[in-house]
Length: 237
Image (cartoon, rainbow, N blue to C red):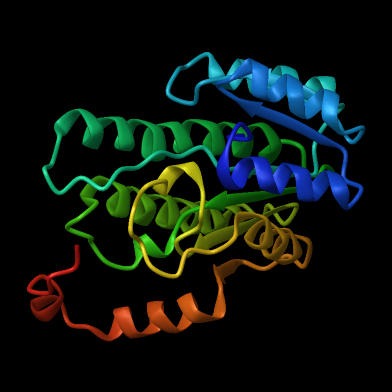
């Protein structure tokens, strides 16, 4: 879900290249149609906007068309550099990255929790932005913390319910060269296709959490050590 651009599209292509049978979902029909017609292993599609209640029904139809899925991969997300704190952008980010993510991931979790003989892996893109609140992108960084905590909570819920057939991966990329940050001056931008390859390897190995790449793993470790009183005084733009 979220296969019409950025990491979602790249991950769909990498999965298909590795021999997975892939179904794609997103808002732009023409992009989805090109994916389906352009690769023999991308076999089905659904047009869905995760901010709308109807998106879960579209996902159900896609899963039924594919006769079930082994992996649900959620990459639908938006965000802006928003130092001006434009409320339209803030609320749109929260609606997509928080409510939309919970709608889709929670729905697929509930669908499969009653099917103990059917393994399901849920993988969701969060971000290194989850580590600290970023003044340059308040709603985006907060939404990625929400995403990460939501996946952690569902993982615990699965353990409580002894739902061993449902597993999870929280994917935390650094700044990736995609339309999401197009035109920005973010440093150390990663190549989207290489990041997608790393993500797919981590998912196939069943990793619970993966931060991409080594530089960003170090950066996140350093960020985590900065006390709150100092962090809020830093001029990170």
